[in-house]
Length: 177
Image (cartoon, rainbow, N blue to C red; front, side, top):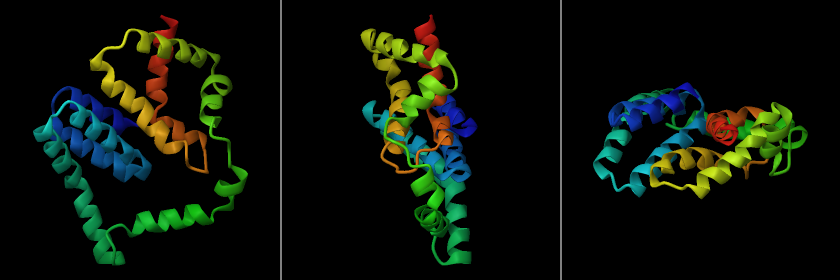
């Protein structure tokens, strides 16, 4: 979460190369967190910032390419750890049976399990869409894209909320205010 939020902070500060490096470190620390590269890419695409997108891509490549090269040298494939991790996930009974949850489980956890304050996130979402402004595109992408990535997965775990929980907390605070 630190590297994901840092990459967004650096993006807003127009430090595109550093933002890319941060999202690369985000990906290397937790592979699904690489979805933040998609968020940043969509944001830059929507705003037609092509040169900035190239800088983010170069920054992302700086930590990821050495990692892939080492995987290629040691394992014979640059993405072998990703393939091995996917194989383990597919075989894990705990993920596929014990933790199998309905598609709405993340909403249940957000609004009913931890704190009842997140119910105000629904109000915040209503206020946000009622007063829509184009400058909130990055925020919406940060909230929606990880959610859309994690919803179809059969294994829904509370720890996956960490990527969009900071943004839902912001919606909660907007709803409270």
